Amino acid sequence: MFLSAAAGSGSVASTTLRRLSVLIAVSNDEFATDEAAPIVGDSDLAAQLGAGSADDEHSCLRTIGMSTIVTGASGLLGRAVLAALSVDDSFRNVQGWTYSRPGSVQVNLTDGAAVRSALTKAQAKFIVHCAAIRRPDEIKNDEQLAENLNVRSNEFFCDYLKEVPDGFLLYISTDYVFDGKNPPYGSDDTPNAINKYGQQKIAAEKFILETLPGKSAILRVPILYGPVEYLAEGAVDEVLKALLNNPPNKPIQLDHYHLRYPTHVKDIASAIALILRKRLEAPGDIKGIYQWRADEQLTKYDMAIIMAEQLGLPHEHYVANTSAPSGGDSAARPHNCCMKTDRLHELGAKIAISFPEGIRDLTEHVK
Ligand SMILES: NC(=O)c1ccc[n+]([C@@H]2O[C@H](COP(=O)([O-])OP(=O)(O)OC[C@H]3O[C@@H](n4cnc5c(N)ncnc54)[C@H](OP(=O)(O)O)[C@@H]3O)[C@@H](O)[C@H]2O)c1
Image (cartoon, rainbow, N blue to C red; front, side):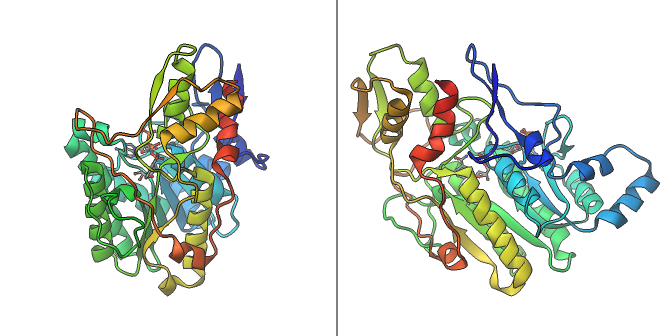
């Protein structure tokens, strides 16, 4: 059986959002997505950008004008960002890019020529760069590949946007730029990452702000959750999967050491739309580093208890593991990267979804 779990819990208002629905298979532990649906923000644009003669392409570009690109549009955050921008009247021609999804605009962001060509074809003006290799342990396996995507791809975007009047790059970064030893962290505090992922994000932030001053901004976000294509797509639903797979009453160790601020992708997407709208209104005011997160401080153990209660599962056998990890194969994680969020609060950003409310979308579907 497949259930639709479109971004957030509200009603799905448009064809675009229907196409973006994430389908969750709840039988026999299989999860799938609607691969036939184009991962683009505007179905008419998708048709226009599809196959056609060179003449067709030119007349189409004259018609559609400058566009907003969302990279990583098939990812956990990118899907929500694409959905939010696509229904926001401030943005025309929102185009989602993926690496490998059939039916979408596929661009390998490690290939400079391909990126330049796709940006030119789309007449990109705003770029929200969500694509990344973001699992610290995956980065350990191929640091160079991750470096090419997480850091070097920004060279291509900056080169292109330098020539675009009012062009703007919003790069999505992480709270893992901090070492987690001395929170809360302001956006001007010196980052000091303890794993390669955080170090790559710091390098990208620095490169962008130096190369494209006044035409770029960084948004740092914490651990994210929201509608998923499969359980364990994100670090929060990975906890849910572990609970579901755990034999009844068998003790299960859950991290109660790392302090997290899980934030729903819909709240991050709203903050991104706000930043872009403010940029349209007053370009000079929007630049530098922003940070955004929900307020609830939770460990994975805390998250598990909330999930178990929603699922009606006993949780007396959940073991809160309070010890700091002692090395091993996993990449190091910071203890507490609580970020100050004053710059976005001043712009008017709001958190609308509490953790129990946001996670209910997932727990309801797996019941
Ligand atoms: N998820 C979190 O908890 C979290 C926490 C803090 C910060 N962030 C940051 O938030 C941003 C979004 O993360 P996410 O969780 O949405 O990531 P994600 O779910 O892992 O999605 C990654 C995206 O990158 C695309 N991609 C991978 N390799 C590519 C390549 N060579 N060229 C073009 N695109 C490529 C993928 O496309 P395909 O699907 O086609 O492969 C996919 O759309 C990232 O910058 C991440 O560092 C995330």
